[in-house]
Length: 582
Image 1 (cartoon, rainbow, N blue to C red):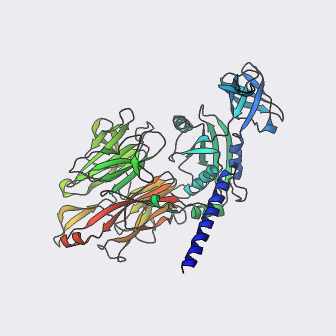
Image 2 (cartoon, one colour):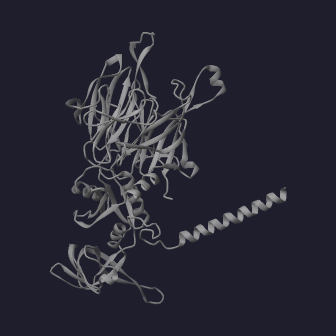
Image 3 (cartoon, helix red, strand yellow):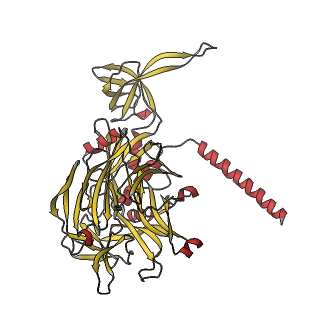
């Protein structure tokens, strides 16, 4: 038996050594830019078109006058109309200290030119920045090009995610993700400049009879000029394939990244770019406080802080809702936190100041509040009796001014409160109201309030339940609750679905959870799990770039606590990565 074990161990060692060598060889092989040839992807043409503007090259300026430079290379060398290249001026030579031979030459960047015409062996370019003279060199380096990736809200999330990864897999671009929405080119280009991007990749859905058409436009970040436009016709079969392929997340393969045990009990989580650097921070609520951190292999301080930053709350106020958005359009997300103190509700907006590296409250109001369409909606509360009161309305607010102004009332199905619903789009662009009903199913209503569709199964109840000061005939107190969030990402809406310990019997807790995605389809919405088998009780979740972070609560069995009649709960972060294409 010992000999067999030794042979197995030796074989395992040899196999590991072989795999390591193979990996080293694979990593050492030069990377080739371009969409993979064997995939037959519908995205190959637009991606190759984009790549053509950034092929590494070098050419000499043979003549320059009146803002026009002539280059000693043309289309045969990869130069094409619309391409922008940097101009470098030669400086002093580097001389080898022993041989005295020239081994190199300094170059100083002096300008940028845009190619206006290109023949096979020469090309013309206009000077758009700095200057150019005969004898200068123009170059495009092989370094990855920083590009902002922006998708309009009318683009199917599955398609845009698929395209994003094809573009990223080309190896030529360092992509900066941005939230989807409806923004002008000026806004997108301004964001690209602020994040240090050279180009913006903008995706829109242009629509066509019976076909899915995606339009890619490439814009220079310096001035917003559009230099390439490609229409992408996506066959229906490809759309369905993408929805299956990109609809799922799986645990990170690195064990340390799959689960992070937390010290203390946390109950809310959100993700935001709080300092405007393009990298998301994670915010978690514990007790009455909020903690700001960077989630990697471990929890680390965020935004260059030496310690994990804490936003201290009133010890009598429990956060019950946590949301983030750039509410004042300054390029930095704000934090909205809603708290409950014995059924007295307060809402606060916190803002990060990069100069002081600290947070401050910029607004507060005695109201249930929620972020919607980059603004706020609100609903009154019943005071100490607890619960929601009256209609949901759009709400005006001003930084530094306590309170709010009431705007128009939202048209919602009867009995729907502020956290029960969200608006979403169908496959044909129709606006639907997605509602979490009292029976724990999700219902879809059209603009006229007509019920159109219901999920196949119940999604489970809330984990945030509070007593009202109103008794039922049985003598028990009535309750009110804060439902799980609907989180928008691309064209999808995501939420938690819980499986009860004992089927439909309430009150016995939940044995597992999953994160569900709902997208426009037939019937009005299609539902599919994006992360299944989440153990324990999911409390909340957030998207962090291409990762899904789920905050769970676990009941810890401790014999001494059982004797004392105490329950001990601990919190854990489960991190799911987007599943790779097969």
